Image 1: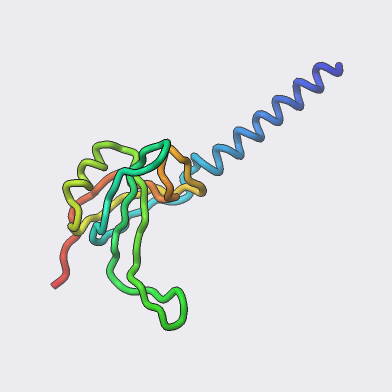
Image 2: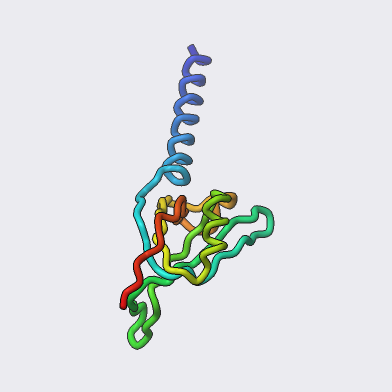
Length: 126
């Protein structure tokens, strides 16, 4: 009887731990498209080399009174094909499809936003 209770407790703890890990690191909280000019794209890291980028979006935002900055979308990329496409389009206007996770993983990048595809070039405004 005691072994059965301990087994049940261990199974419940394993399921709870797996649920927490999944919800924090693998559950896709949101996804969408961001468009703008690719400011930089780089592969970096000490232990895990990941692709990191920054997209400058149209418009301005004010984080503090008296300070105006551009809208920036900071993202990571895990797919080599997407990374290659972004390396060739540096400085261009792009539409990036991304997935948002609640927390980052070291081998997935430093950002909660992971770009999984480059849709098309965004139209330029005149």
